[in-house]
Image 1 (tube, rainbow, N blue to C red):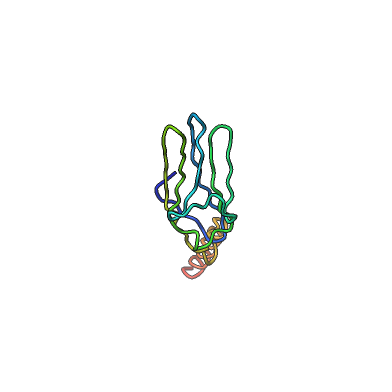
Image 2: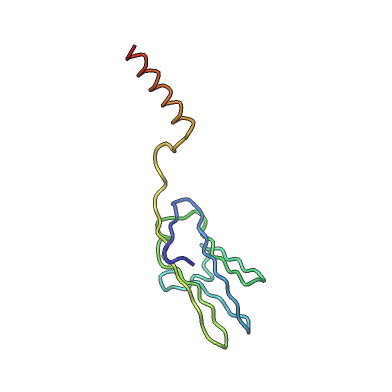
Length: 116
């Protein structure tokens, strides 16, 4: 997991870890030190290859915080963590290359008409 990652309000955010061990480790997820493994707010996916994924749908500002994936077995413990920084939805018009090009053409036409 990266040390810091960003999410957008209303979006989806995923944290993924690869967990390998024998015996097979048990995996727990934490947010700000609180176990969220059974919290219905979050979805979890586990693959046979050892990938474990935490999925947060419809991100809100309350989701901002430190997330930790912890794997335990009889041989020991391993963990990784990341901080989720949540930002608001982008306001205003998004950039459109076509619109930008049309504006440039119009400005050029206005400029050439004014200089003639």
